[in-house]
Length: 162
Image (cartoon, rainbow, N blue to C red):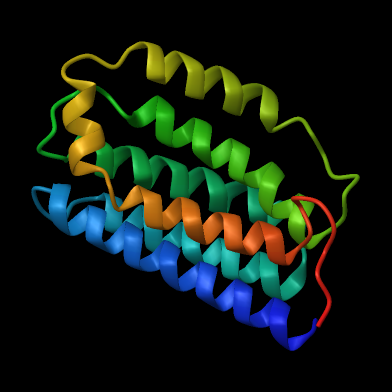
C-alpha cells in the first residue's frame, strides 16, 4: 500500500471514529450493554484483520450491528426500534469489509439478510424523522470517512497512485 492510500484510510477512519463518538455523545442516555457488544465485536474484527479468517468477520460484524442497534434504542430521539437496522448494517458490513480486504469475488450471501433486516427496520420507524436528521449530522462525518476509505481502495472508479 502506498503512502497516499494509507493517508486516505487513516483520514477516513479518523472521521468515522469522530463521527460515531460525537453521535453517541449527543444521543445516548447512558452506558449500557451496547459497550460490551461493541468491544467484543471490535475484537473479532481486529482478529479478522490480523488472521484474514472469514469466520471471525461474521460474529464481529453481527455483534457490532447489534451494538449499533442498542445505541439507537438508547437515544433520546425516540423514533423507533433500531435493533433490526443495526443487525442489517452488521450483515452488510460483512460483505463490504470482506470485499475490500479479501478479494472482489467475495461471498454475497450477507446482502440478503442484511437488506431484508435493513428495509424492514427502516419501515418500522415511527416519529419525526426530521429530528433524526437534525440530531444525526455526525453521520455525515462517518459517510465522508467511508467514502475516503472506499476511494483509497479504488471502489469508486480507478485507484489513484502517487
